[in-house]
Image (cartoon, rainbow, N blue to C red; front, side):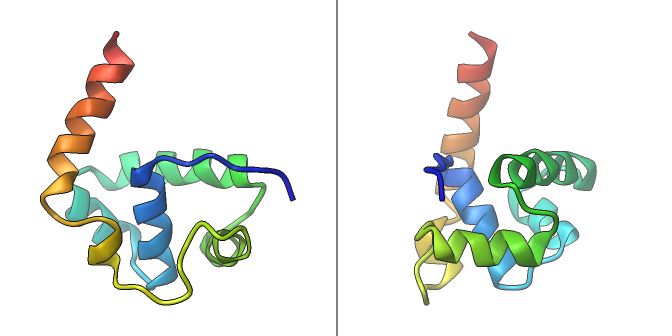
Length: 94
């Protein structure tokens, strides 16, 4: 299995998927459109070489990208969302 580098946002989304979150749940959590979430999931799944949410969750656990048991809030506290998103937008614009 090859090494996969993921962002903190991707790790949080993988944890949400493993917790059973829907696209709508994730979009609400990160104040993004469902289409934007679907596009990001499509790109992440392609990088991981998986076809769906279940495969992504299983693969993330196998790769050690997610803890075997941990609340999502420990991985992505609410107050980190805007700070990281602002940084990622800034990084993409430079």
